[in-house]
Length: 325
Image (cartoon, rainbow, N blue to C red):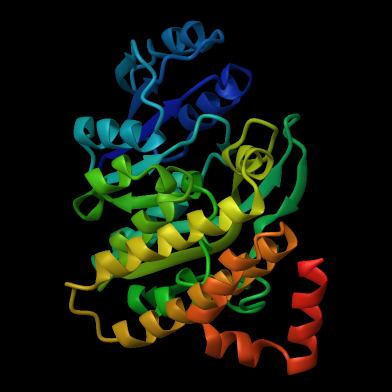
């Protein structure tokens, strides 16, 4: 049985990488897939490339926005609404993959109906397609062994052990979703802070009370370049703004999980709370450094226990005196 997979390609100004991306889609060894091409009002020559490839028999839709949506998740939602497949692959327009990506990623989903998300390890590549690293290093601070081999895990446990700490699925192009469990909420689209990390909450929503599969083989190539989302955040956002984005994300997680029966909700919430407190502590130190002492003090009062436990008294006093100068 080879069920239909819907491949959604949301593009914005990635003409330089589009042909590589599209060729890696159309050359998949898994043949039963449809392609939905979406362009968010690109200003480069993306349209010419997409029109050319839209003639491929796999392409069912090729849509060009007249006004830029300003949010990639608007494009995701549009693609999902058009999709006819049982499974969804969001193939980001600047990435590329091995020919057997779909064939490999779909196997766990076909063997186990409880698995709602299957993803693989990713290489980090530069603008010239050169492999410059592997994203396993991103999870080594959490667990050096877990992500070295294939596994299937209960989604709730995966959230508690890994996903609540940080987004351990750094690239949507590495993911195959079960469509019935994938939904893009209005909250995700309408909350500005979540536009940079909305995929993080989507992964959580998809696997809660379900199961997740991981393939340790690096058959996806996640491109890191000056115009990538991660690079833009690093350049355009100050450190304190990044902390605020993380805090907004964690608030959204709590709001989503509150009404849902989850056996380990208490453990997830406790870990999330500790991370929030440490983020606030870090924010307070930055505020001290920026001569905003009273704002920092107000934050520290709210997390006094964390502040007390973080360092011995003399170190705390030293930090305050240094940052207060």
